[in-house]
Length: 241
Image 1 (tube, one colour):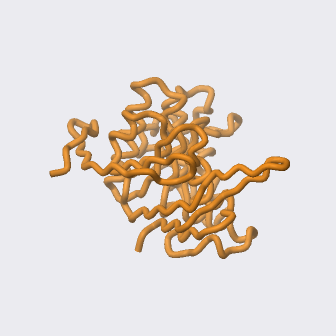
Image 2 (cartoon, helix red, strand yellow; image 1 turned 45 degrees about the vertical axis):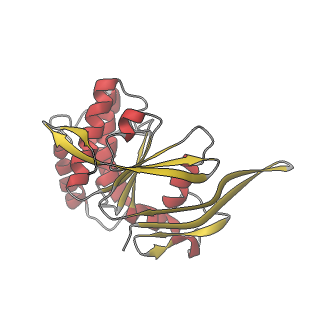
Image 3 (cartoon, rainbow, N blue to C red; image 1 turned 180 degrees about the vertical axis):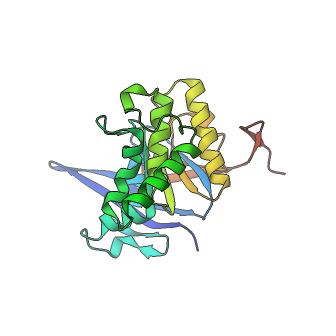
């Protein structure tokens, strides 16, 4: 069963006396374990699509099935639980709480679940070790580099063991080296079974994913598939034969 099945998605935003058609009958299927990117010019519907898949918004028309649950049939009061249980988010701006340590930021989502404090700390510590920050557990965000802050955000996105991680321009605030390291980390996590959808404007980021979906005017205009292998820890493209 696919992790995401979006069918006939239409999203219309009223703007005074006019309407903005952000999505126009868009279809998208994402299989479990995929590592895909979404590209398109500003206004093509990338962020709107991510918001609908992540249950941050609801479509005007169409349906989204997320990990076997048709979320477009759920009441708005049930969507926060679906977001918490099935979706991890990674943003360009990191969105860390500056008064909390790295460990506390990663533990934060578990405060709203049934996970006890000891288990929450154990999970958070293990994830921070996994993303290379085992020696930075008690540092606050302003004591970390941009790349380290994004690693904390990635650990936070994974702490609830989501079905899918949605990353919106995860390298947008990073220099080239730090951005490349973040994509390599996401690829490693993907190879361990985590599904990712990455929205990006950067062709070099898209080239390191297995599939790129191109949007224009709220519709899928084409897809590009590739096989990407890791060479010395850096993902590189291998032509599909």
